[in-house]
Image (cartoon, rainbow, N blue to C red):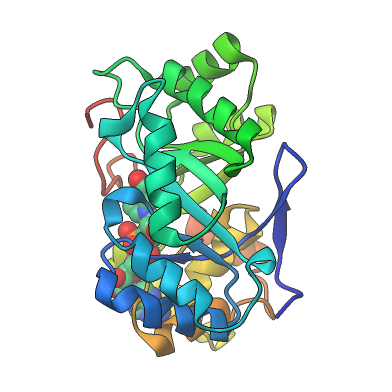
Length: 275
Ligand code: NAD
């Protein structure tokens, strides 16, 4: 299990490339789900204050006897906590719910441009990293101009930008910007919320490799060098989604999946409109 792939962040820290997403996993279910994921070999869990399950995630993290040092926990600052002071309290609340002294990665969940406080909020995260309560800091759902502004005004490049990314919405331009600036791209809704998995191209590639379509899509993210955080609350799918380290896609598979990109493929809100 320890041989799973990792990504090195621009602050020198190492993050597992694959993790478990827990959006829409109820707090009451989060502990057994996270416990099952750790048993299956996952070492990264992606939660957020707004998911309402940090307490359950924390119980799950403590349920297996795996040392906290070998785990990687991400949580996110919700939109109502932008500012200079609010992020300090928001992170403290998240840590007390998680039962942890620090998170491995703290993200600004959305830029919420109508608030116009994301640069100030980013400065607050930079200060939180200094305290050690957030070991690495990054953002989520930031666009190219918003990232450029953060970098220009603070000189600190986010370690990660977690964005909607799946075969129907491949985000090539944003990925290129990330690469140029040393930002790790982490894909949310990596399976297209499960809606992509009966696409004939994916089904065919899955049959060829004797894998499931979910495994093909997760492998595609890994082969592109992206972080990937598929969500499942079903133990057999949790295991299936991490059983992807012993095969690779070939060039023909990748070309076919590249062809599924669609400018109308976005499933979530546009970051400029979500406040
Ligand atoms: P996803 O693409 O991971 O799809 C999850 C759904 O796919 C499941 O609910 C299930 O229906 C299906 N599925 C999962 N594994 C399967 C399998 N092996 N076979 C068949 N079906 C399977 O969608 P998601 O939950 O939206 O995204 C993953 C994670 O990304 C979230 O849990 C959350 O942690 C994160 N996320 C972040 C943001 C953000 O704004 N930063 C937004 C959305 C999601």
